[in-house]
Amino acid sequence: MPIWFAYTLIVLLVITSVLLTLFILLHRGKGGGMSSMFGGGVSSSLAGSSVAEKNLDRYTVLVGIVWFACIIGLGLWLRLEVGTGV
Image (cartoon, rainbow, N blue to C red):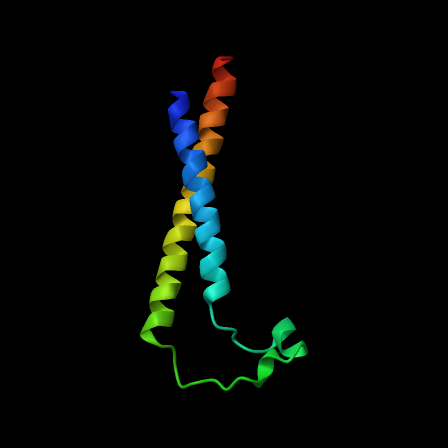
């Protein structure tokens, strides 16, 4: 496989890593755990998730799938390149 394939996957991997981190940080805390130990459990919970929260969930899953596909693609590319001895 050509080297530009690997560079494309690496760039895509970096972009999706940053997006995945941002999307995860944008999620609302569900209460309990470490956040409630430091005063994060004081916020009141509204009835149900909003449309924005559901869309954020979908985008997070989609970016996670693309991120995972980039990892698998890079692993397969590396295996093929090492196998051919180039």
